[in-house]
Length: 463
Image 1 (cartoon, helix red, strand yellow):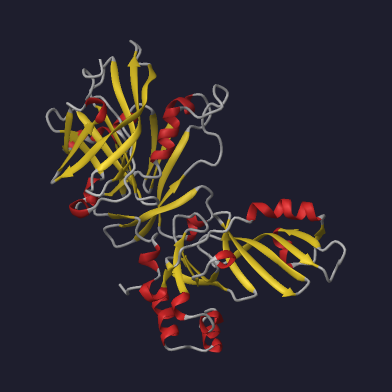
Image 2 (cartoon, rainbow, N blue to C red):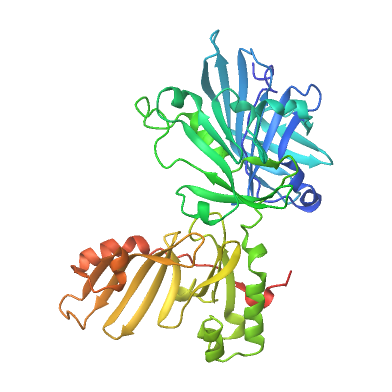
């Protein structure tokens, strides 16, 4: 049975990077490919710019089949640039006369190799070493069924998900709904892609992330933004977990292939990656170090005075998306070990597509990224007063919005010096005096600091 349906498969795998010759062609593997002999089997490839991984789906396009095979894989590259995957899942999908289906897992330990040769992808499965499948780029007539367009751009969904979704198109937006969940009255919204001229219009939207930028035929620049639902959109009365098809639709929004149309051009990840955004800022810091600016000059230029104290070869930088809006922040700090590892002396973010300074720190006013998405400010006001202020970095803004403050204040209450305040009260005098156990129990969720391996600033090359 397995040999009979070897071509009917879908798989998902991850690719860290292509090596050697493959790095020259990595950009063009996104999109749809077709099995070389019959072209009835198609492969949809999606690149996740956050992880530099790829999700790939392969399936049989012909309707009316009693069975289709589904394969899902996670893979990485070897030293030769080939893709190696293991823990692959093979699923048989059976259809009845009413086109309803049932999935049965065949195995979860699949493995194999995918290699890139010129303009072909070659798949060899370890479960059936005698079989090789070759894919070539698909023609337009093989992608039209799952391509959705508006006035500015199009998106292409995997062939394997055809029939599971409904669409709503507007001139600058495409929304995808899970058909069965919507029919059940639970909304069914899986994801949406929208173009925004003004970054401030999407900065405050929960569940949104910038994917790239689009320029229309008139030269107008748009942010292309992914929007995910913030509440339950599937029929949770039938299951405590989302249906597999809903989860696949939801996840494909993170990596969806987008194409500019009608004179528009889309650039994936443009305007999101730190290495493309902060070159001038880094060059300014390099100049400050080389010219040995004093502390007064540094502070006048909104830079930490610490660069006049720590050794030049101990100053480094990193990129990190603190506010999870899809756009990197620039962090400049000290290359150190132990509790000082990951310390930040300057934070920069993007506001209306321009780099802006957020805050500077010092030896008694240190900043860290904590709990993945917060900025923690460790401060000390004397031997008996110190604390940690926790902030969110507001999207498209330099504002640090206060969340919670933990203060040890032996001056105010020597016997019980543990205090907590919340929200906008961080900088006010409204403090809750708590027990030592309560203090550390509440504080511990923010004790996880990101310990960046900073890149030495001296290694930065101007673009």
